[in-house]
Image (cartoon, rainbow, N blue to C red):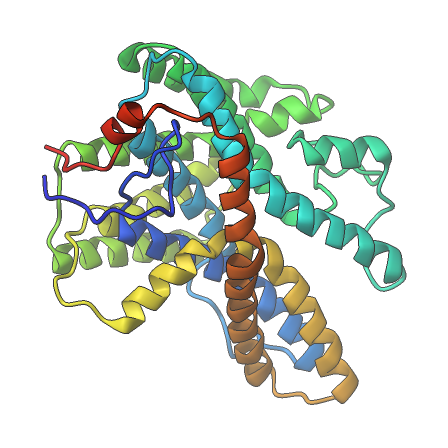
Length: 378
C-alpha cells in the first residue's frame, strides 16, 4: 500500500498524529455543502422568490448527512484499527471524540439559545425546557415541548447518532478486533431490525434504533477495504462517485424514499460515493483548488454547525433590502457560509481543540510517542 501523506488534522485514539486520506476531507466538504445548499435554497425561495422551478435539485441534498455517517464509520476504523484490545483505549478514544465534538457544538448551541431569546418572535421554535437542553448537551435525543426529538440547535440530531456510534465503538475497542467488530455489528444490526417493533411512545429507543445507524457499518467496511490495499485509479474513482450520485438521483426521481429504508435509498449511494473518492489514488498533479477544498473539508464541522446562522442572517438582510434575485442570494449565502466556517475553524475551533488536546490528553513517554508516529502501511 502506498504511503499516505501525514497530517495532524486527525488524531489516533491515543492522541498520536496519524495520516488521513485527503479525499475524505473532500467528501466531508461535499457532505456539508450539500446540507448548506439545501437550507440556503429554502431560505432564498422564502426571501427572494420561488426557486423550485428553476432549481430542482437532481437528488435530495440533505443526504449529505448520510455521507457524513459513512465517513464517520470509515475514519473511526481507519484511525483505530490497530487499537482494539489495548488497556485504556476506550477511555482515550471517548476523550478524543469529546474534545473534537463537544466544544464547537456547545458554542453554537449557546448562540442558538441567545438567538432564541433575542429573536423569540421571529424563530419558529418551541420554548426550550431545562431537561431538553441538558439532554441535548450530552447528545441524548429528548423531546422538546412540541414532542419532536430535535435539540435546540436543530442540526444536532445527527450528532446524537454520532455520539451513540462513538460509545458503541469505544465498547468494541475494549475487545480484540474481530470480537469487537462482531459485537458492534451485531448491536447495530439487531437495533435496526428491532426498530419496527419498538413502540412509538418509546421515542428515544426508536430514534437510536433507526436503520440509519447501519451507515456507520458501511463506512467501517469501506475502511477495511482501504486498509487491505484496495485502490481505484483516479478516473475509475470519479466514475464510481458519479455512479453513486446517479443512484441517489434515481431513488429521488422515482419518489422512493421511505424513512425506514433511508439506509438503502440514501446510505447505499453514500457508500458508493464515498468509495469512489476514498479508494481513489492520490492525484500526482496537485491543484490549488483541490488543496482549498481539502481545507474546507477540515472546516466542514464548523460549516455544518454555523451555516444556519449565516443563512438566516443573510435572509433577514435580503428581505429588508427587498433585493429579489433568488439565484444571487443563493450564491452569496453559500459563499459567505463557507468563508464564515473557515474563519470559525481557524480562529475558534482549531486553537480550542489544540489547547484541549494539550491540556486533557494523557502524556506519554517519548519512546511511546515515537512508536506512534505515522508510518507507511504495508
